[in-house]
Image (tube, rainbow, N blue to C red; front, top):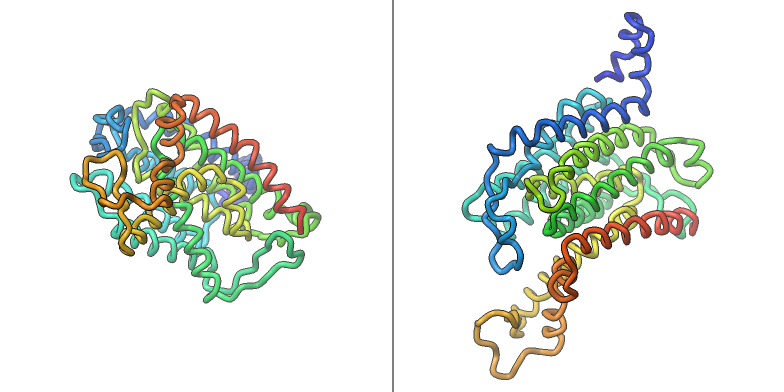
Amino acid sequence: MLYFFAAKLSEIWGPFRLFGSHLILLALGTLTAGAAVYLFLPRLWKRLPHDRGRKFVKGSEKSVGKPTGAGLIISLIVLPIILLVMPFDLWNLGLLLSLYFCMLCGYLDDASIVPWGELKKGLLDLFIALAAAYFLSKGEAVTIWLPVYKDPITIPLIAYLPIATIVLWLTTNATNCSDGVDGLAGSLTLISLFSMGALLYGVTGYRPVADYLLIPHYPDGARWAILTFTMAGGLAGYLWHNAEPSRVLMGDAGSRLLGLLVGVAALAAGNPLLVIVVAPVVLVNGGTGLFKLGLLRILKKIGFDTTPPDTNLKQSPNGQHVFVKILHKIRFPLHDHCRHNKKWSNAQVLMRFVLIQSFLTPLLFVLLVKIR
């Protein structure tokens, strides 16, 4: 909003012309969102539902009784700031609605006495991801760039939508699965959002750099950078209160919105593989858990005994297949494996995962951009 009124406001007072700068709006949105969430979240979280723990998840008892679903409050605090600093068109607004609908579905699951089933959540996520992909494409063919291949590729809408939908569904659910240690999902996603914001503003959104790196220039890159940085600012304000021992949990309302936003930012930068660059630990940590769950379901339908070894349920008299035993030997998400099998503390899990992602992101970006 400020962007479109900058010229008129500058007639009242000259410095108002700065509101026409994407960089100023980016900085304003980030700082304002961070300060607003830091100040107002503690005053509002008493209205949130309380965590009831998760059955069969060791350590979840530590979260019981804490306010959860804070993603609702965070996103509502940040929303007027986004509307103020980000230049919008109807397609941007449609995408913003998709992000907030994803948040709302997560919050309703957080608040529900009986948690939503996996099928229901998965289908809702798929619908939201498809809608977000369509708004991103603006209903037209999309130009993307890939590693190894030098020239940009134009993909027709009918081919782009399923690819983008899968990417968005994966980042949404992988981020949600990574939310099990105080500050872990938030800290990893904060790195992802700041990385994507910098890429959108300084690389794909800035023609001289984009031309130098042989990457297509996306004029809307700076707009998406403002959204990404503003949401990252709000996330930073939340993490102040989520540091171990946490006082509040963002729940599915926060993790699903943030995961979807990471995918949106990567697609807005024109390369679906950027999700691997900016969120490698999140994808391995949560994405492998989704893969294991799906694989065990398939094996069970085929007829294999997939009973977890730490339950009291009677197992097959012939014993389990060695492949099933291997799957059960490694806990997913991986942060659970590190805590319970490797005996890492929560603080060690957080610090080591953050360090790994901090090193991998710039390395993978260089490889992605230069090997073309």
